[in-house]
Image (cartoon, rainbow over all chains, first blue to last red):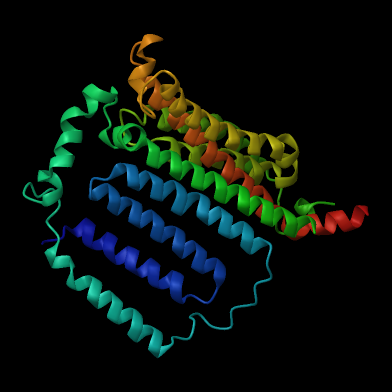
Length: 179
Length: 156
């Protein structure tokens, strides 16, 4: 698998931002690094030809999450950063490093992007959606067709989860605020 | 008096207020575009809802959180979220009433053509309402934080 210069630069940027978010001692810098990480990942989704996911990542990860974290930060007292980076725990590095190695070992087994012989592209289910989505649901975006029509019941569950989680968080926070 | 009076949290800036006033309608339009056009291009209720919610967050940054909260009642926000769930669920259950399966949009074909497309648009709009109002509600409550406790004690 070969990387173009853009993909390589993006991957470096994302990994760098992730390290920054994890290691920077200043919380504000860490939040900003996390936002940049989300933006980088959303562009990677675009390169992987998943614009729906990229849009979500950009709007939720880089947008709303950053704002909520910043607002939460504004309500807390942040101690002055006495040094640039967090101290690194060797055992944590070993554990996380092992996990990354195990995950990385599966990468060569993945099919190339857009590989016509990959099981997803050739799969019966994928082909059914691509062939029938427009006639059966009247929408051109097959992702939306799956989301709102074929798997509509799952999406209703998802929406209710967002609603329930939101209401629960609001109830708990409200009690905290007005206690 | 309010969260806005704390130093460093809110700075009244003509530049920010003017920018937000000019940009906000376009962002809201873009959010609705993402929601409605999600049927034919990337996007949908989840993404559009977040963008719509960010309009209110933008207003709060420009005009102060407290005044935005007064302008947009929290009850309206919660009603919007509940309305989204009800819209989605009633579209799904309506097809059962008409004798079909859950969310079998084609059952609505007797009322209007392209029922499937419009049904999906409505569902996306419902999802958008849920996501937007949850984002706005979380932001309001997180922003209330300590400022509100001080506020309550001051009035008591």
